[in-house]
Image 1 (spheres, rainbow, N blue to C red):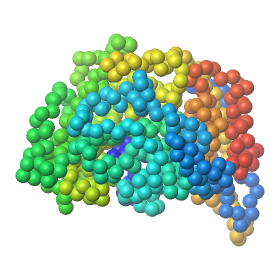
Image 2: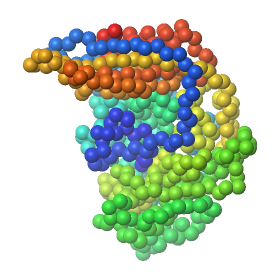
Image 3: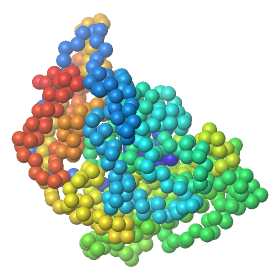
Image 4: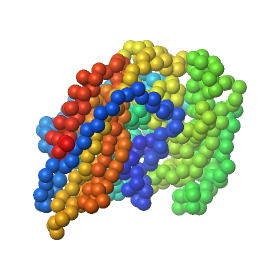
Length: 510
């Protein structure tokens, strides 16, 4: 299940709140460090170029598609391009990297640690699934409505109208349920989303999900609850301090799927789910504490005397009910680690396995790895620098990341008016916001600066009191993780950004 962070861009989260089912969004945890930037600033400003009243405005995605080659090759297969195509070359170049299965890489080590708690033959591992999926697999099979924001080209990378780079591991869920090859499974994979630029977001990241099912036809006497409790009795116990104050089901907050499940079945499944995931947390955070103690024994989180504390929080996800988030008390704050719940039965019915029922969870591997290895910037995962990669060996020897350099950053501001068209009545302008999406700016800046761009964020906004035109100011921070950028380099990058803003977004610099 895609119960994970970054499911939608920040702009689309607001428009999504009233829709059902929702694409899950868990905000990134507060362990991500605050930036302290030694920087120098320079402002640039631009306004839209001239347009007549009949203009429909510039479309970044359409312009991108017009410039795309007639076909793209991924994994030895060729995919036609069309007016929907919006995958930049920089993203295509990352597809072969597959960090989640690269030996000794922190993302891969995190996967291995979690997998070790879900052993075969009960659980099958799926780590080598193609990132190219159909629109039906990515959205339709999971019940996303036709007008869901997650389907927009502003959020999703389309190879063509019918084919996308998966936005979540759940795109493979229906097929794995149909295979019915094991009682449980885990999927680990690279996923792709157009989103913000900062230390916690990247257009490619990695998810892991898992599921455990019981079949009414196969358990003794059809008694699923008893079968689950029997399985739970064989699982190892732990000494976690667990806060779980709420009832397993609540008619409004966390409803039972009453048409399919009994309260007794859900009580058993929830207990099995929680014990399974609590065991994962014990492993991960015990190793994180050990690594912290080795690196800096005097810091608060390095204390091994205080026991780990976790709590279960009621939640909503479109693919499970009842649902929960698991939070861990770490460095003086509660952190969201994962989301989980009892699998929606309609997903299993649609996959052709109506007699099965069980649980599912999902998490972001980078998010967990940033805690486990104390890695402060998501761009580091993609570094080929030996000073980074040599710090990690195997999952039995978890090392706290040692920064090998601290380089100053340089920020530059870009201010612009949202596109506007002339009123048919004359004497005023109206904002034409429908052809603007924040992710278009993110994509443009990322294509120019790559991993030399640390952060892009909305810094200021203003609406003209007479014309009604809306102005936005974005602050772009340039910083290399490996060396100091010269003023000449950052100026050249920013000039290229300005040039592309004119050419691809149709603005007029001022």
